[in-house]
Image 1: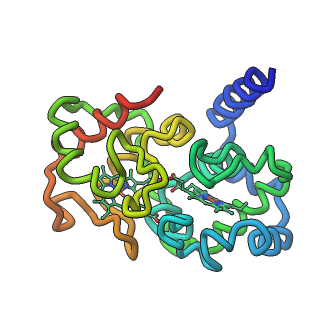
Image 2 (image 1 turned 120 degrees about the vertical axis):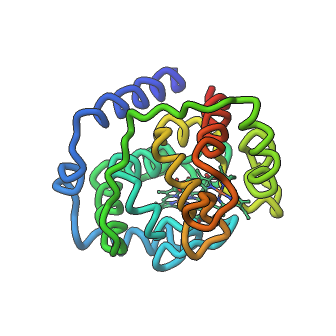
Length: 215
Ligand code: HEC
Ligand code: HEC
């Protein structure tokens, strides 16, 4: 029953996410509540300014991340968490929608770079097998085999094959993150345009492979 309820919620949020414009999330949020709530529930793992604590919590205040993650992306990430990691579903751990939206509003105060208009309808046109080889060569050392670093402290990347993450992250989001990296973290920019080792086709190959891990 709990499982069914969870799926109803997931589908509901997915549908709501299609219709709600970013600004409307913040319209139903408190400006003053977020900061205190963040200190109480989040700072321990993500740092005072969202600067991250490595494996303990990633850099959610990172500019490339905030510029590409919509309010809905952040809201869902907080509400549903990342199953199998220490990021719990906060909707089931004492936070209501109002509180979660207040946290999103607070996180936005860290953002200094303008949001990037990603094409969320873009579908990576890559070769899965080639992508798997490239992933093993360039990504697995941090993100783990099949996109799952598990609890291994030497695998510092996040859980890319996480079902909640992949349900939220479009191919456009994954391509952008891989190409541009996350400044100030160990996630480097991989596109040749940014001095990295991969061309556009190779990045699409890898994203096609990551998408194939979605259950
Ligand atoms: C016990 C540690 C811990 C706490 C407390 C915690 N998080 Fe997280 N959070 C994580 C980890 C670890 C991840 C990354 C999981 C992964 O993908 O491997 C994460 C992921 C996230 C993400 C998604 C980031 C991305 O790049 O996709 C957001 C947003 C987030 N947390 C916000 C919050 C907020 C807001 C709070 C407070 C309500 C919070 N977290 C509390 C550990 C924590
Ligand atoms: C040296 C370690 C390392 C390597 C190698 C690496 N990453 Fe990352 N990656 C990270 C870390 C750490 C993060 C989280 C950064 C942060 O705190 O925001 C990340 C974040 C990401 C994200 C964003 C996830 C999210 O939740 O927002 C994607 C997508 C990603 N990496 C894809 C890749 C791909 C594809 C490759 C190979 C081409 C790769 N990474 C190689 C360490 C690495």
